[in-house]
Length: 317
Image 1: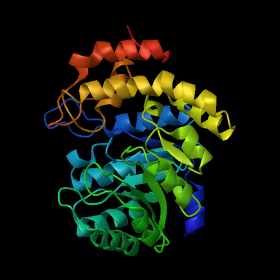
Image 2: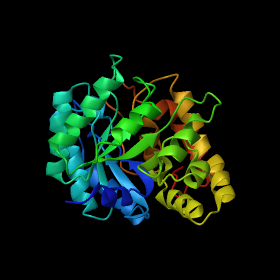
Image 3: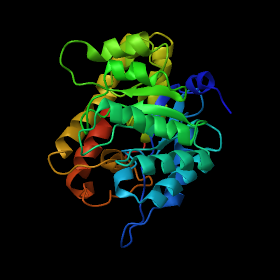
């Protein structure tokens, strides 16, 4: 069994949320063959150990639209297809501690090294509730590394004091972090204060500054359709070329964020911005499951123009 230090050391590079694809059939059943091909596409593009981490059935993988068994099956597919080429995380968001314990054991059983956990949503739980929630997952599968994801927009925001308490649980090895931008440098404070104990995953696109302060990975949605570009940004920050990395983020990542913000006036969900880009490129894709509406016709041309302007290779006419 890997030690907490060994688990932390494996969380480096791009944090790639693998989309869940569906077959164009009634009920939109999961298309595992498409997921396998996509994993190979990412791996061939440089998303390998030391430069990338794969998240299966996370938010962009539409965990909320999947049954428990589907979530486990998607994670198993990703683990099997990655085949040791990179670490794999299984999404563990849920409103039930008992289901979280099942998810932790399932992550262990399918071979995922990590489980991503957020505070339970819908009800405004307390920090004491959340501590016992995380502890239950750690006790259910102590060999699985826990990544605590601060989803402050769906539930309460995890505080620095809570993080200090979580440090007492050995298998809590990482923080996937974003904070409200109130102008008081809360994000920088958290990264600088806790990067020695936890592998910090930047979920706020502050990649150059967070890397300087000790973050070891960053969320990259662009990696799903242009992995070579995302790997190059990781290599820039690793080499200390922070100005170059920031320019690339403005050139390529910011247009995707702007398109995503525009689409949020039409629908909401998980993987649809990335899957739209993949669809425009003629790669494996699908719509999201309802209630997320299909964006492919309404936003296809806007996405195509965005990809062309950014210089993404393989965009279809």
